[in-house]
Length: 196
Image (tube, rainbow, N blue to C red):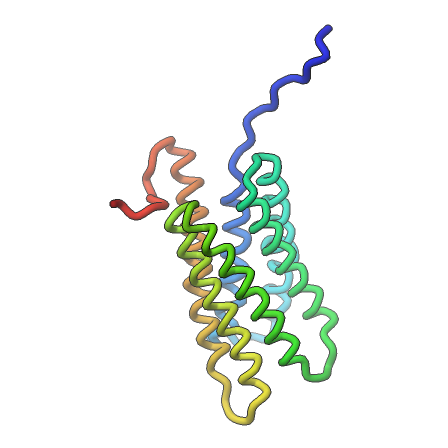
């Protein structure tokens, strides 16, 4: 009897699961931030997505990326999975007092982290780079929108962040869809990179 371990079975690419979870949750929240959806029950739906799909499924995708030795994918998916769980937790337990400055710093921190991921994503694929580029802008405008909320007058920067987030969510769907469709058909039907 050999003491050598059996070779591991090939693991499917977990990136689409993470991209779909991130993209769908981002899209739903961004539609609200862009002031396109005002139904009172929307928050519960968005928070459910944040906990289970954006948070849970994306975090699991990140853990599988660690198993595949993909440092970028593991770190990104686990980070944004954790982000969505924090958003869910904070919203469920948010204090009734003003927290605009704290939220602005929170989003600014995510903008900086995302800018670092953007630099790394340039080596992954153009579609993934586009997701991170627009996500950086989304977080930046969310931070500015929170600071704007501390001033008198109407706030429009959060709505700008909403529109940028809609673009981000759609780009994440495209990137995830491209990986799934290309892997299923075993050829490139949806390009992840621009042709040179």
